[in-house]
Image 1 (cartoon, rainbow, N blue to C red):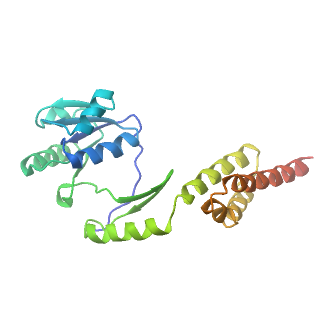
Image 2 (cartoon, rainbow, N blue to C red):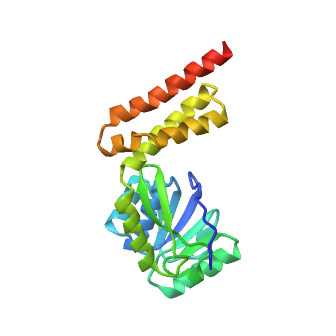
Image 3 (spheres, rainbow, N blue to C red):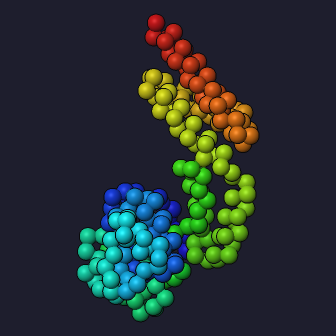
Length: 219
């Protein structure tokens, strides 16, 4: 089965996480990073989940899953080792038309989560459509070896440059060409070598030239 890829905006949106073990901990960490309002239902919590609860990063109801736990949430993840609970979560979430995922059980999911390579705000998603997590992890390692932290810096600089060009009234077509040229310039090599200031100066040079041309045309 081929899935439709999508990146969800979960900022300040309520998400239910069923389970309090190590796998649930990993899911909670991703959800917190995405800005979700995480509700955890579990009889117990790992030490790290308990710490997040004490800090107010998650809400915890101590106990087993019941259908009323789904009230008001937009997405559900079940990460327990109790198959009966996992199936109950999937049934109840499906009946309410919610997005739901049971970890490592594609047959009990309306969506699956990809493996991620993250470099700053850059996210690279890898999925085998549930066919082989082993292949997914192999591809993830290969991509991680090729795409270093410099790509996160490249994204940061390019995003800032794009915004600055737009604010200064540079049109779409010229903006696109300037950004393409910037990305294909020496900027990545500079970032890879840790020469951040020089890379930032390249971005400033592009902005200065574009601003000068815009001023001349408008003059």
